[in-house]
Amino acid sequence: MIGNLPTIYRNNSQNIQLVALCKEKYVKEFGFDKILHPLISDLKILENEGLKFSNPENNSEEYIRGSVFAVLGDNLGSHQIGGFTENFSTSEYFCRFCVYTREDLKNFDLHIKTLRNPENYAKYLNSDFDKGIKFNSPLNELKYFHVCQPGLPPCLSHDLFEGIISLDLMKIFNYFQKENIISLHCINQTLSFFVKKFKLRLSFPKMQFNAKKISGKCDEVWHIIILLPLIFLKSPIKCSESFWGFVTSMVEICRIICSPQLNRDQIQLLTHFLHTYFEYRKKCFPYEKLLPKHHYVMHYPDLIRKLGPLKSLWTMNFENKHQYFKSIIKNSKNFKNVVLTLSERHQLMQASLFDDRFKTGIVVKNAINFTNDMMINLT
Ligand SMILES: [Zn+2]
Image (spheres, rainbow, N blue to C red):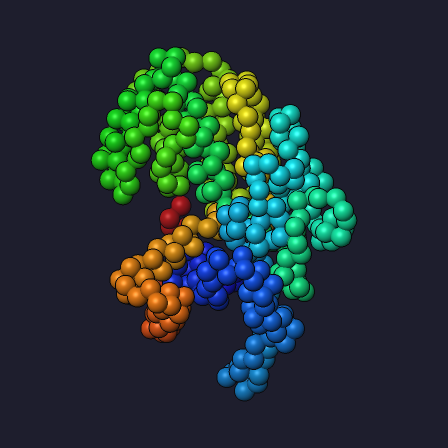
């Protein structure tokens, strides 16, 4: 994915290029060093020599250089490629952003510990202490990229909507049902009503009492969060301040993290809401243990400052790309050499798109230049 492209084009899965396809069993057999070798060699040329372009305006030739800004994936994929531990349930150090321990998580201490950086990554790698690093990532061979710069951003859809929000929201709904505050049947009915009312192109999962998490997809859980205030609109709800604080800080966290643009004050506000969210969670469910993802979101304000809005770095665009590959193999019914079939079909499709890839489809007719006089007339 070319980072220079405006977000509108980056969100289109057709603008995600294919650099390599590999079966997982070969990654395990040969390791990332061998598999990524051709890609790393190409990237080194791009970093050092660049690509030659001819400039027709002055008949000259120029070189354009580039590098990797971030490698996107879910937590398991990012840890695999970054050389970090892949064991999130028992490993002592499971955070790729800082040297946070399982003991901290058990003690409900979510604070960020010593941040990982290229220097301490190399130090921990060469020491006898296991600090959650298994091997040196081949991506670190690049001149302008390191997995701890931070180069492996989190995916907000996996961390939030398929992670802590779907778990914590279900806990709240179960509590509301148990205390006769609002029934799950009523919540399910209201959500179905909104699907028809707002003509939403999704179907909300039916929530069952005592379920551990909301079983829906990322966009379904995100829509429940958006519609949450409307669910409670008709029936005034009487519950403790802690529960309201928990629900409202949850909505605010999601709203800020999913924003396409953020200023410094909003990032500061996110830090505040994250702290209140976990304070209220502890008050409402003091014995409910925390997951590694609860700690990962504490890194979000710092990561947004360093990498920009995290919505432009989530993996949802790649999930669309996966759907495309799935449809090719389903329709071709050729399983002899899946990797070859997929890459050939993909490249043929890319070649056919080349001419009108960046046309917006917007046609402007009879337009005139905008002047300051018009502004005065408008006001
Ligand atoms: Zn951490």
